Length: 450
Image 1 (cartoon, one colour):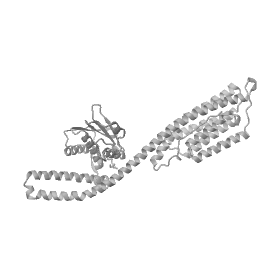
Image 2 (cartoon, one colour; image 1 turned 135 degrees about the vertical axis):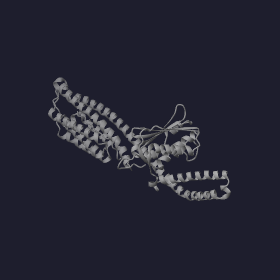
Image 3 (cartoon, helix red, strand yellow; image 1 turned 180 degrees about the vertical axis):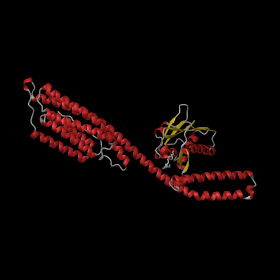
Image 4 (cartoon, one colour; image 1 turned 30 degrees about the vertical axis):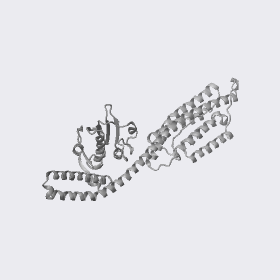
């Protein structure tokens, strides 16, 4: 007649996490189940009190109330302690779950011992404990629970005493046992459906988080491979670019070219574009971690953004580029080429979709820097929005395309920021970049370098 359940979801036997992040994702589902089931235990406590009251006052069966109430008080104290512990601690281990279920089995055994032992139809609640352990525990822990419950049930059959029933009121043992068995069946079925449904939902959420983390790991590995390839290509391009730079310098000093203004102007334009290529190659190498210390620049947020917007506007053919800096309180920061190239990637993607109009807005939201890039192009396709930030999601129809936004999302994620995208009702798309200021602001005794 005792109903006492505590469950925590922690299926370490289902998957072997390879990273700390996957372990945290798996145990997050267990923490949710623990808090939920602690609340449900209070209903179990109320059920015990109600059952004792009905049996004692309604049916007139004499129960050893001091002993049973003492067990109930211990159960309440354990539930309060569990609430305090799991309210602060976020990690659930299999051993802690195993101990909690052993406490449940012990409490149920004590209540059954004082209320008829195996002649009490609520002895079938042992089956509920076994099923929950099979869902939530590792294999060895589940078999241990099976052995413990079997031992407890055997002990009750040998040492407990049946209750004395008041037959003068028309109550008989078979009738009461059948009624109790029906109530126990309904209780078992209801609790199993209720618990297993919610636990399965939390476990599915945990599995989805594991899948997301696995996908993130695959994407980061993809980025590493791309970085190695880009770094190798940048090294290979360094020599021919240097050679071209020397040749163009010689051409500019040659009399037949220096006396021709048109040719001289074209050579100057070629040198400017060559310098841009060398800057891009240097940025690739710096982003790959080579000579990274040289790429850090001490400046302010407004100066960095203003210079960035000016450089991008002058190097791209743009009919109308609207730049609005809404940052009122400037801050000293440290930037490098990685973030600069990331913002350029977003602007370049928007420029390809909307070559005639583009806007960039910069503002502060609390402790974060928010950049909004808006274009007047066709916008994102629904499938692309659903897979935003995934590699090779491109509407340009080019083989290997769709890596720009993929790199943007992952760079911002590494810096603790986020990237979101949406379509405008009036046409075009909006991409928002949010970056925490703590990733780049300079304090008195420390620096945060991107």
